[in-house]
Image 1 (cartoon, rainbow, N blue to C red):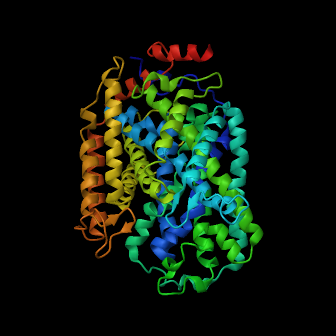
Image 2 (image 1 turned 180 degrees about the vertical axis):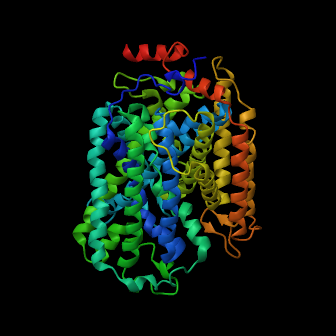
Image 3 (image 1 turned 90 degrees about the vertical axis):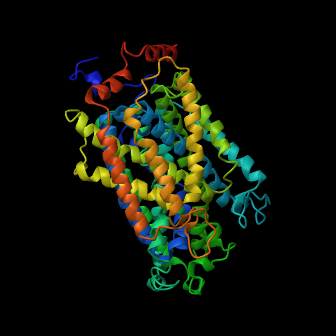
Length: 571
C-alpha cells in the first residue's frame, strides 16, 4: 500500500470524466435541483397539513438541511469524486455499509425525474385540458393522478432529459445555466408581486396560527414536500468528478445554493399565506376547505396570481411550471448516471455502469437511469405519492454523510480539507439525529415500502458482488450496526404516530400502531440515533483500511479496470 503521505491515499480519481464545470456551473447544478416542482406545490401542501404554522416547517427543515449541506461541503472538498454521497460511506466503513448507502443514494436519485414529470403534467393540464383548443386530459385533478395520455407524455419528457444528458458537460452546463437563471428569477418575481396583495389578517384566519398542533409542523416536512423541496444541494457532490478546482468550488457551490433556496422557499410560504383571499380560508375547515377544483389547488401559485388579479403573472408561472421541473428532472437524470458510475467504481454495480463516451458521459448508467425511472411511474401515479418515498430514501442517504465525516476526522485528521465544518464533533451527531427524525416523520406507510425497495437492492447488489472476483473485501465488522439501525427505525416507525399522510388522529386509518405518545417518540428516535452513531464510530475502518479503500479508486496500477476503462473511452 502507498505511504500515508502519498497523494493517492487522500485523493481518489475517476476515469473517463472531464472537469469542465466551474463555480457558477456547480452552484447552478445544485440550485436547479433545489428549485424544482417543490416550489410549485410545497406551500399549498404545507399549509394543508400544518396550517399557517407551515412557515415553521420550512424554517426547521431549512436549518436541518443547511447543517447537512455543511457536512457535504467538507466531504466533497476532501474527496471530489462522481456520485460522492454514494461513496463517502464506502471510504469510511467499507463495502457493506458503502453498498447500502450507495443504493439509498441511487434509489433517491432515480425516482426524482418521474416526480418532476408529474409536476409538469399537473400544470400542463391548464394548457392541454378541456378548456384549451387541444382538449386532452393529461391529469385528473379529482383523483390526483396522470391519465394514459399524461403517462405517455411523461415517458417522452424523460426521454428528452436523457437525450440532453448526452451533451458534453461544457454544453450541458450552458443549457442548465440558462434554465436555472430563469428558475431563480421567476419565484423571486412572484414573491415581489404577490407581496403587494399581502394580508396580515390571514395569519390568524384558517383556525389561527397553529390549528393542527406541533405534530403537523413536523409531519409537513416530509409529507407535504418541504424536505423534498430542499433536496438537491448535494448535486455538486454528485458531479464532483467534473468540476474544476473542486476543493475550492464545491463547498462554495453547495453552501451558496442552499442559502438561496432557504430564503426563496420561506418567502414563498409567507406570500402564499398572506396572498390567498381571506374569504377562501376563513371557514371552519380553513385551508382544508379549498375545493379540489379551485385554481389555487390545481396550480397553487399560478392559481393564486389569477385569483388576485395578476393574469399575466399566472400565465408566466404556468410557463415556468414546465421549465422549473424540466430543469430539475434533467439534472437528476445527470446525477443518477453519476451515482451509478460511482457505484461501479466501488464495484457494487457491474463495470458497464462506468463506461463513458467521448464526451465523458457515463452512457450506460444514463440509459439504465431512464429505463428504471419509468418503473417508478407505475406504482406511484402522482407527485405527492412519490414524495414520501423519495424523502425517506434521501435522508437515509444523507445519514451516511455525518457518520462518514466523524470517521474521517478521527481516521485522517491530516487530510486536506479546503472547507472545515465548524463544531463537527457535535454537529455530526446532531445531523444524524435530524436525518433519523425525518425518516420517522415520513410515516410507517412510507417506511415499509422503502424497506421493500431496500431488500430488493440488497438482492441485486449481493447477486452481482457474489460473482465479482475483484470485489472489495466484505467488511462485516464495520457494518454490524447497520441492520440494527434499519430494523430499529422500522420498529419505532411502526409503533409511532405518523402515517404517510401525516400524524395519525383518533380513528385514522394507518399502519402505525400509535403506541408511543407524541414528543416521547421524537426523544426515542434521538436516543436511538445517538446509540447508532457512536456504535458506528466505534467499529469504523482503521486508518490503514480507509486509506486502502481510497487508494483502490485512484488512477494508477492498483486499478487495472480503471486503466482499461480509460483506454476504451479514449478509443
